[in-house]
Amino acid sequence: MELIPAIDVLNNIVVKAFSGERKKYKPIKSKLINSSNLENIIDSLLKEYKFKIIYIADLNAIMGNKNNFNIIKRVIKKFPQIDFWVDYGVRTFLDFKKFENMPFKTIIGSETLKNIMELKKIYKHKKKEIILSLDFKNDSFIGPLKLIKNKKLWPKKIIFMIIDSIGVKKRPKLIKLKKLGLDLKKDYYLAGGISNNNDINFLKKNGFKGVILSTAIHEKNIIYKDL
Image (cartoon, rainbow, N blue to C red; front, top):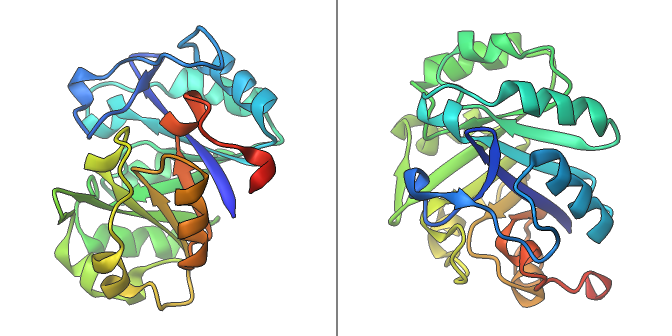
């Protein structure tokens, strides 16, 4: 089971995500470290556990209001051993092209994707693996409806991002997700509502390749030796 810390960056600091209310996000408070600096947060995470993948969401870019590219580039350079997955709010093929050659895997979020034609352009020209995030809020899919219906557009790695469960200690129900296609031979990851080892083990038994989590890590609710 892959454990992937999620780091949300807003206005050049790490913030605590909660239910997708991004404009209300405040600097993160962590039991690991008293800092909201991106580099310091990553250092503290790697002292806690030997994470191999780290997920970074550039919330400014996702919301279409500036970006945090400079500090993200710095930490990618400083931690070459980490496989970074970065969501920088790709809307179009041209957005994707801007960072096509950067040493991280790009997350394409359905929330920001303009349409499936742009996704097809990305697939046609991509030089490296990308990850598709299928985003949900209030039990509804956010993004082009053709994307959720046409599973041929799904790459190998799929994130089910339950936005309103982020920062909330309540594991999402899997009934709808299973209907969407958990039977397909893909690597599935769940983000949102994962509180402890029980949740992680439950998802592992249900075929998930990994989990993306933040609050449970920073509140020290994960017992790594038991996983």
